Image 1 (cartoon, helix red, strand yellow):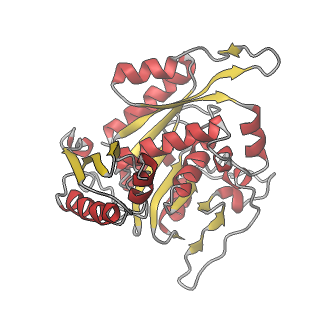
Image 2 (tube, one colour):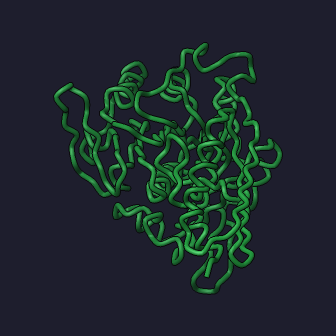
Image 3 (cartoon, helix red, strand yellow):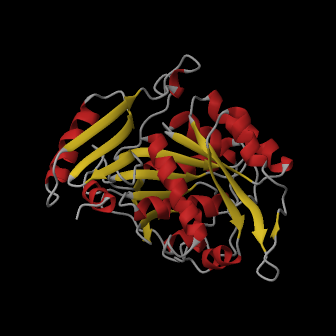
Length: 352
């Protein structure tokens, strides 16, 4: 018997052109209707390349024709014109001096403007969620002074160089990683001035053997300093994810981060409101420790997507401390993992 799940599984074998991720995990499937043996599938794609919907249509037809007992197939694709954020202020990435990183299809920056809002936790779990969808993912910890990726991925490996003298990325949980935390001991501070810091950052981005990646996640340091400006002015970033907590103090700095990206024509993918509430295990009450709804209200005010709301969670903290990001947990059994996977699907769709 043909069911919606049968059709979805068949379509999950169809990759988005040029990516290792499938069209289902990209969020292209909007509706599936099964009437006996007949099937109708509605998709929505934002692209300027006419070859993309054509290839998806062809491959989806082949996948659906392969379903046992399928009858009439009605496949509809709604092609929308994507926004052109790089043109909004009269310049393109190339005019601004930004360039693509070889072998990397999409670069996503995770930024906050303020420290202590859980940006690295978000970056780590976003990377894990994207990788679990079948994508090839790298995570570059650009916070030289407070690197945390090594701890969050439970690795104490030290990078080596390949035959071309490129730095070999560390691999953990299926993610390629680079962080100052792999180069320094736990108690060793990175004492470097601005120009040297930006040089280190460029080495991490351009002299690491990242290989072929669908996504490279950049965990930016808090603020709008030398490192952030160097990255956004020299690297073509496909989207910026802004992390904030609900209170006004964090939102003030988040607005500054968003303004920085807008000035260099980097599209804002959306806002993630972190530490939204705490569900007390003792009395079952929900406590809004850092206020309520500030990130959601800011997203609505600016017309920017609210990608998700993540509560304060003891298990998430414990998993991060032992090098097992919560997104590794089954999304069916863990609400926080499910939230991060939902966010990853939205981010992937936005930058596609």
